[in-house]
Image (tube, rainbow, N blue to C red; front, side, top):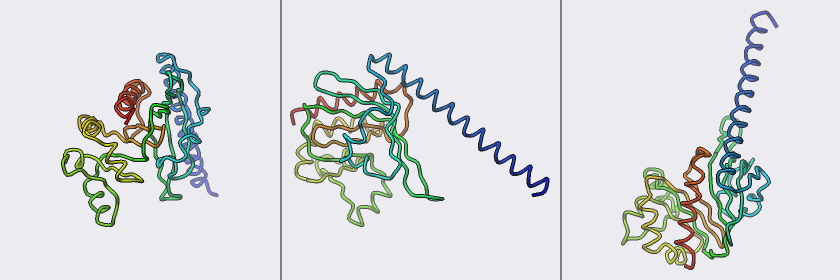
Length: 220
């Protein structure tokens, strides 16, 4: 290898090392921010020791991709409800087609919930129109175009999902459609996020919104 090659090789190596060091520093700062959130909320910081991947294995989001990891978790019990807030990530594809997905989410486990399996996310007009053309499921309500135009709703048993999403539930989501919530529930589980990796400082608000929604769903 000539002198130019050595310089190029060394430069690439330096970039990789610096990039790794920066990434580790950012991860450490984010973990420290989550620990501060735990202190503020009075809920234990449990990191990766949270059991969510096992608890939520039958939910749609936790069956996608590979390299799944729920970390920076804050977890505690409030009465009959276990609250877990933290970061979740997974990977789809490989090589040049590899894509990383990262979300900040709240998971609730509660004996107050007994729901059919359903999944809701914001509508993506063009892509969801194509999906509908090829038979993709989207449970719509003719009497509520505001809701149906804002969200894609899917579920294992359509009749049960329609019963769950009554006027009050649909109104709750329509009133907050600019926040672009993603939601999934099955049995005693409720999963809630905004489709992105958020700031740890936003965790308290996300938790309160998830608990508010659970309160509306409870008893249905």
